[in-house]
Amino acid sequence: MLGLKLATDPRWVNLAEKSLEEILTDHAYCEQKAASSCISLIQQYPDKKDMVEALAPVVTEEWGHFRMVLRKLDEKNLKLGYQRNDEYVNALLRFQAKGGSRESRLVDRLLICAMIEARSCERFRLLSLHLAEQELRDFYHTFMVSEAGHYRLFIDLAKQYGNPEKVQTRWQELLDYEASVLEGFALRGDRMH
Image 1 (cartoon, helix red, strand yellow):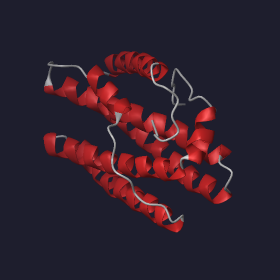
Image 2 (cartoon, helix red, strand yellow):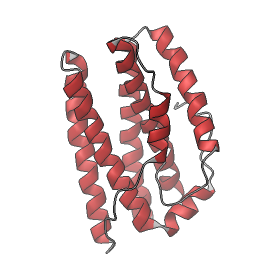
Image 3 (cartoon, one colour):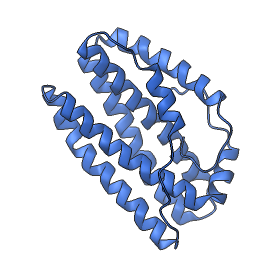
Image 4 (cartoon, helix red, strand yellow):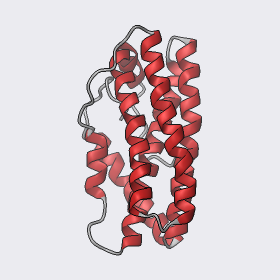
């Protein structure tokens, strides 16, 4: 469904499980940044009524996810650490087209959001299947389902505001680029991406 060109190395789950405080911290900030990204899209494109109406509840949902992760940290007697530089997202942003029309820049932003949601969905799926604790598997299953919906929403919005054939071509380019980005990263268990 997601079309990702490079699957996450299965060993990532084992590393993440050993770094639970760090992976939950990174997850919390990912949710916060997702809410902020939706707010930014709404602020920059208030004239895109359908998008504004579709993203407003996503802001609320992502902020709710941030709070869920904070509660999970508290339940586990773990602390929210400091936010770190997100190398993955920064690499994706370098792929974003410079110049072009306002609409083409919007489509690129929507596709990058879709990519982040797709990779998050894939990683949450791995956690939901392979973590030792059933409670944590259930916790991450909830996030997996949500991210799949967000991925689909961003793809649909990109197609609504751009030429669907061009959007599909650009999405394939982004999939290829994202795979090359991940190939260049060391396997780490303290990051969601």
